[in-house]
Figure 1 (cartoon, rainbow, N blue to C red):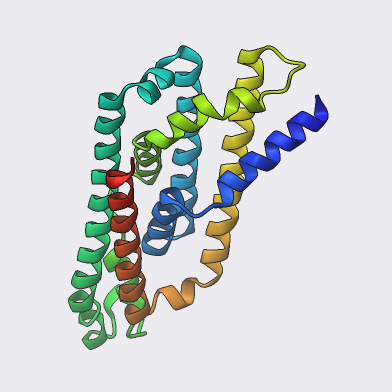
Figure 2 (figure 1 turned 90 degrees about the vertical axis):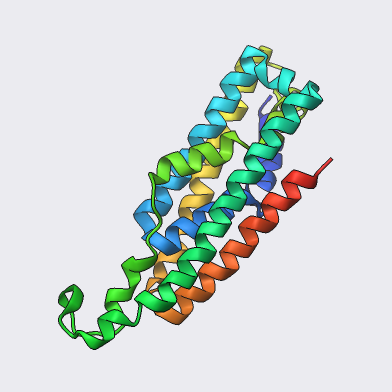
Length: 222
């Protein structure tokens, strides 16, 4: 049973580290609002996985995975949400280009005399970061397909199916939280560079395009 569990953990780890919408959402939030918000977003994503696990156990995820209409509805909602976040990032980059100049002419603004120091908060993401991560994850129907199609085959044979599935969902959520948390910590080390207005605008534009690209990919996936 231990070897099966280790093999399942390896598969889930590969799924966790693969770049996707969750990482893009965390990057956007951490760059815009700092490490604390990035970690809260990661917590929301991990909570979303636990919710999907509960839905799988209740059989609702299987219904979603089997129903073309339900899958399409959730897929389009998820794609729309990612496009909205991407458009928000692009708008923030455009807005920041104008607002970042204001503190430079007012040395006392923001309590500091540095010309770029007051620009960092201008692109701060709005909304609750935990809810952003949770909603983004819940609107990803591929999790339902993954949990209903993949986890049953990975569940250790020595455990009952519900216990094995619950264990794997918990492992997946823990791996996701650990991976995204470590990623946010790495981003925080480069925070000084992110606070430069030109870098901030560039990152907002890149993340905006990436999020819109993920949204388009989800919307057009078969």
